[in-house]
Length: 341
Image (cartoon, rainbow, N blue to C red; front, side):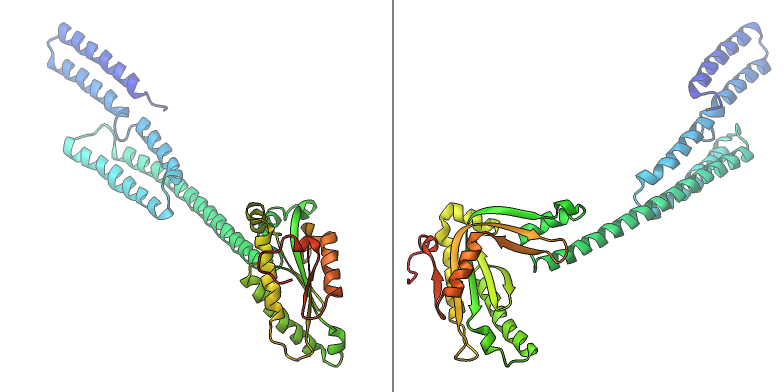
């Protein structure tokens, strides 16, 4: 502070006390003693009061700190009540009740104007601070909503365990490729037998409706038996078990026959579906073995399986008999009990 501090004034007060004692000792004049006492009180109250410069500067710092302390702009309005009601009103009340006249009314008005100016700066700072926080909140909410929509879209394209790494790595195209090596999985291929011949005289719309009707039933069967759909290619529907982390963990704990049993049930349910015509038959092939699973591409990404296991399962389907499920020795070794062969 520019004015003397309270400590300096206290030291001056002690000096004035000594001066008062000296005056009292040297003279018996009551007027000289009164002047010394009055000088002491004026020096002491000049800074150590509501209108003292030290307290005013402390209040200025306090006002500038308020935007970080008070949570909302609405609550900041109460600083005006404190400034005019408590500070200015209290100063006038003290002046009237205790005859406090060490500071003039002009001095009080100047201090109130200075504090009002600082409070205005604090209010402006709080306004822009709250505006920035509100804009950040809206941006975060919109980002979350966009991520939620992307998640809903991706869950129809790729498995759930792949979506999170894809969203995390979307800013770096070089890390968008996601793959994993799986030691044992079972792949099922199902194909509508003699599809080209049976749809030769159908219109494109009729062919698409025909495929969509059956593939939708296949998807429902897969969902019921916890079998993962992989893809559809023309008249071929591909699904698998042992690809997602849950199946891998179950395979390691209980054995592959547990998850393979779900795939066999799905195959049996597909073969038991009602047909639109007597000539509609399904050829199904299954094979068990190691694969590589991953997401390929950045535009329209798809979850794909790679390896000889896929090719062998496709050949079992192509060479299989209509209405039957064909598989090899690798799958036979893991068949659950009770499956007719």
